Amino acid sequence: MSRLSNKIVLITGASSGIGEACAWAFAREGANLVIGARRLERLNDIAHHISADCPVRVLPIRLDVTDAQSCEQFISDALEQFGRIDVLVNNAGLARGRDSVANLQESDMREMFETNVFAVLRLTRLALASMLKANSGHIINIGSVAGYATYEGGASYCATKFGVRAISEALRFELLGTNIRVSSVSPGLVATEFSLTRFRGDTQKAKRVYEGYQPLTSHDVAECVVFAASRPPHVDVEEMIVRPIHQAGFKVHRQS
Ligand code: NDP
Ligand code: 8X3
Image 1 (cartoon, rainbow, N blue to C red):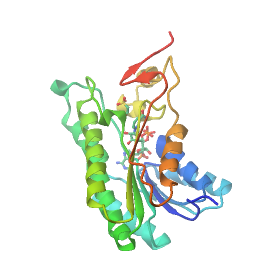
Image 2 (cartoon, rainbow, N blue to C red):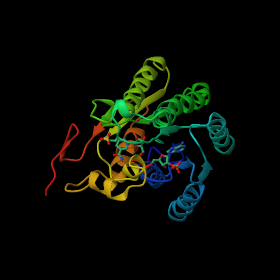
Image 3 (cartoon, rainbow, N blue to C red):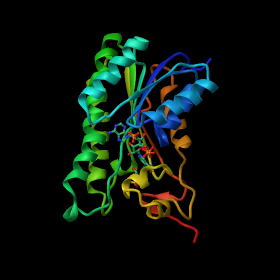
């Protein structure tokens, strides 16, 4: 039997990409799910398909991670339905634009920090209240290679992902002596809706990001997340950095 069987796993940003792939991967291991995102129709559809395929319970909840009340509701609904939280995957996140600092838009900076940093702190705090009482749990933060190095036009986004790394590191100190684990999974280029969001719906620009080489799939990343979550309780996978084979740093070797 899988170590994740009957676990209660909360995933933010599960309406597409890595979050959706994590939902499937955990469900296939027998974990029950609470999945959140703003696009509830998509979540319902994903929940419906997972439930048809895997003998697990899936609770889809409309969640805006930038809204404190919505986050509180997400956690309290999860606890009401399942009584505990075994794993929280802080996955919801985005980049908005690739502007240099000289050209940054106030709303883009705010949206990235609200979504990628404040929400991770807030949801982690909310989940920890219950995890600390149980002296058990696992926080898994989706970072990025953008949390380790920077590039032109990436100041805001990279700063948020450096921030996620800082949160994971501080949590490990704060939770030392408890049975709560903290892991971070930091991917390079993954073919998802990420670039479409970053380039504000410009499909051509988004497509070019993934051309000429084989990017990671969201499934590749979900496998890493499930690996971290399914280690024995005394093993904490601290950090996983995973890139496509043809990416080094932010340099990509493309076949033309
Ligand atoms: P997607 O755009 O496919 O998925 C992003 C998810 O985040 C969606 O489900 C979206 O749901 C959700 N989300 C965004 N804003 C909010 C919000 N305010 N409240 C709730 N949910 C929100 O991209 P990815 O799957 O690629 O991104 C997932 C994570 O992976 C992000 O943290 C990203 O930074 C990280 N990452 C991605 C990489 C890549 O190359 N793709 C590489 C490294 C890290 P909805 O819009 O329905 O709310
Ligand atoms: C997303 C990867 O290279 O677009 O976190 O910043 S990158």
